[in-house]
Image: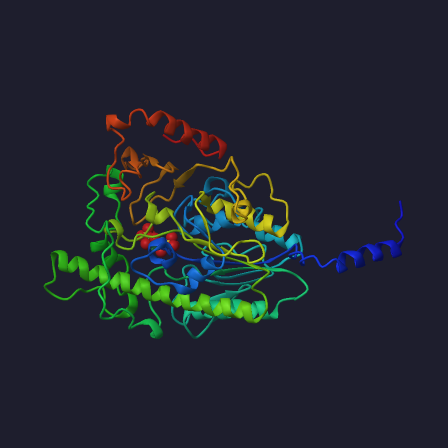
Length: 481
Ligand code: SGN
């Protein structure tokens, strides 16, 4: 049936005149801000006793804070591949930092592009192959440098003067300014900080100079309550940190003052590390604040979904360690805040489990683009709207793969429920030991004790083992014993 144009016009003018609130635009913009190794213990929105991050907190205050966000493999490149694909490492092929990302596969930026978005990737990439699915990219080579870093802009390497966190923010702002204003945009704004070697800029170098930073509660943990594979791992603050990041900050920090030993030496190395970590976080916070002000000044704040997270968490002296990888809370738990004034109530708190496999489906869903059935995560949009679907996950699967590595963290997988962690260290062909671990997070929130062999938990085990196997099959993860 043909509808006369005059009738359509009449309908439209009635709709326009009825005084209803304007509908949110169907296609919001997206700014996905990801830091490297930023952990919840160092974000004040999560009640950090050490760090103050007013601008990162602002995203949560004006939007939603996820209280239980986790990555499924706490390592840089695998986490980035999971973001792009919405799939676990064993499915997207990026199990470790050594693999090169297969950029020919489906990713959410490609799907956004096909749906008419303009897309950009700016900052740390670390996936070895060139980015695909972006109209514009300007990335750090590999880990990138803090000072006067090189960037690869659409295949061309250029050195830029300045500090990496400032430069990445400048490039994102520039790209948004120059964009085609007729189309929605999505930009991945990826900081290098606060990854090692934690080199603060001049503005922040003197921060905390005369202020000793408190030790985290697990600083005294010698790992004696945990299974052998954990005890064998190699991320202790002394001497591994000193050796691995020799000369970090270029201020001679690899050499403690002569004669220091025992607790005084431990505190000395911790103070060097934590202060530089907090200084580079302060610069991220300041730059994110500058960026949020820019969005507001451009009139973009209302219709832009701003997501803040990190590629993985981090030990910052917790359990007397640095680095990540292990299926402890500090590495696998990540900050996650989402601001979208049109749809997310300011000050929302979300307790349901959110995973990094969920980011791609969430962004597509909010953009109105169908989520492909082969993505393994689930859209967080209902949670953002204040509803937890009845069948939302109550547990999650984790799998760390990289081997060998200097931290001697052997591959392991496991299940995390609200109360328990069941972890399988399945050994390596070159002789790393196998072990099971069970952690009761309710009784032992600091994760100091493996109770796998404790008869008191014999009744709890079968259901946990079944749940772990259910996830393994559902996620098509290989069976490894
Ligand atoms: C990367 C890792 C660090 C690690 C060094 C050296 N970070 O920088 O975890 O200490 O390599 O690792 S990541 O963000 O890139 O994952 S080692 O295993 O080769 O010694």
